[in-house]
Amino acid sequence: MIHEGARDLPADLLHHPEQRLWVRMDPDSGRARIGLDAVGLAALGDVVFVALDPSETELRPGSPFGTLEAAKMTSTLLAPIGGRVVACNDAVVADPSLLGNAPYTDGWLLELEPATWAQDSSALLGGSDAEAWARAEWARLDEEETG
Amino acid sequence: MSDWRLLSDAKAAAAEGLATDEVLAERAGTGDSPPTLRLYSYASHCVLVGRFQEVAREVDLARAQALGIAVNRRPTGGGTILMGEDQLGVALCVSGRGVGGRPRQLMDRFADGVRSGLGALGVDARFRGKNDLEVGGRKIAGLGVCRTSTGGLLFHASVLLDLDVGLMAEVLRSPFVARKPDELEAVRRRTVTLRQLAGSSVTQPALRAALEQGFGSSLEAVLVPGSLDTAERQAIAARVAQRYATEAWLAASGGVDPRQHTASLRTPAGSLQVRATLVGGSFQAVDIRGDFFADSAAIADLEARLRWSLAAPDRIDATVAAWAQRWPEVDFSAKDVSAALTRAAQGAPYGCFVTPRSSSATHA
Image 1: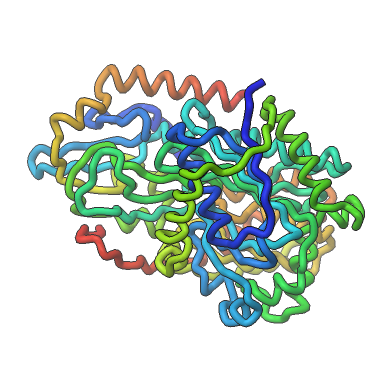
Image 2: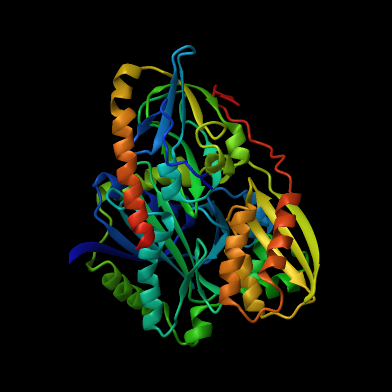
C-alpha cells in the first residue's frame, strides 16, 4: 500500500535508479540508511516477505544484502553503495507492510557506514535528476498498468 | 523471430534441478547463457518448499525420509509442492534487463506459454491471484518468478499432469487439517490435473510438445534443441555444493513465526468460520468452512486467491470483491466474507520471532 502523495520523493534522499532504492546520508552520524523507494514498490506490488542477511559485513556496491518476495516474485536486494553494515531493520522483516506504509521512515532496510561515499554517491540521483527519473518511471508503469 | 535454446530433461535430482534453473537464469542475466526454455521432470518424488517457508512446518520430514523423498528449497516464492515424473517443470531463463513491468504482468506474459500449451490439449486455464493457473477454480499449475542478483529472470511453473494426492497428504503438513481423509478431500477440491480434464491417455511427451508449441508462439521465438555447455555444468555442480546440498539453505526460511487465528461470523446465509495462518502480515493459508451452500470450487478459489496476499482490510476487500464477481451464485455476501477474514487477520498478532544472524550488524 502506498499512501497518497507517495510519488513525491523526499528532498533529502538520493536514488539508485536501477535498484530502485533510496539512500539517506546523515552527515552527523556518518551513516547512510537504505530503503525501497515508491517506484520500486509500485513495480513489485505488495511485499509479503523480507529477509535481510548481508553476505558480508563490508558490502560493495552491488553486493547482495537480502531477498524479498513480492506478489510472488522473489528478488535479490543489492547494495546501492558500499560500506560497513551497522544495522538491519528487523521491524520490516516481522512486518513487511511497513515498506508500503512508511517507505521513507520506519520501512528502511539497512544502515551502512559508507566506505567510498564520494565515489558511490556519484551513481545516485538527487534533486531534479531524481524527479525526472521518477516521472519517466511512473509514466512507464502507468502505461503498463493500463495496457 | 529470435532463437531460444530448448533444454529437455527428465528425472532430475532435486538439488541439481533447482541449481540448473538458478544458474541458467543468472547466466542469462550476465549474457553468458542464451535465453533458455527448460522442460523437465524430477525423479519421483521430491518436496520443494518456497523461498521463505519453514521446512519443518511444511513437511513431515521423518515420513519423507522413510519414503526416500528428497526435500529442498526453491529460489522462487510461494508454497510447498510435491514434484515427480507426473509433474512437468517449466523454467524460462532470460535476462531481466529491459523486461519491465509489475510482477503480475511479467507472470502473465510468461504464463501465456503454459496457457497456450494447455489450450492445445483442450484445457482452458486462466491466471489466478499471484501464482496459479486454474481451471474451474482448481489449480492446475503453480507459477513463480525470481529476479537474480545478476539481473536474470527465472520464470518457473509446475504443471500437474497427474498428482498422487495420497502421497501429498502423507508427506506435506497442513496447518489446519488433522485427519488425513479431510486433508485428501481438501487437496482434491483445490487441485485438478491434466489427465482428469483431458483424459488419462495424455502423456508427458504430449504435454511437452504442446508447451513447446505454446511457448514458441507466446515468445515469438524459434526453440532450438540444445544442451548445457561445460561452463554451465561446472557452475551447476558448484551451486549444488555451495547451496542446494547444504543444511544452511534448507534452514534459510524467512525467520518469522506464523500465527494462527480463527474467526466466526453469523450471517443471514449461515455461519462462516475462517482459520488463517499469517506470516509477517500476509496470509500463508486460509481455510473457510460453515453451514452455507456454496460450490466447493468457489471456496477453494477464494482460499487460493488469499494465499500470499497482504492481510490488510483494503487488500482483503479487493480480493473478495474480485472473487465474488467470479462466483455470483455464492449465497453469502462479499461484505460478510470480508468481515470474517478481516477479523481473523486482525486477531493474529504479529509478535514475530526474528532469527538472529551471524553478521556483526545489529538488528534494529
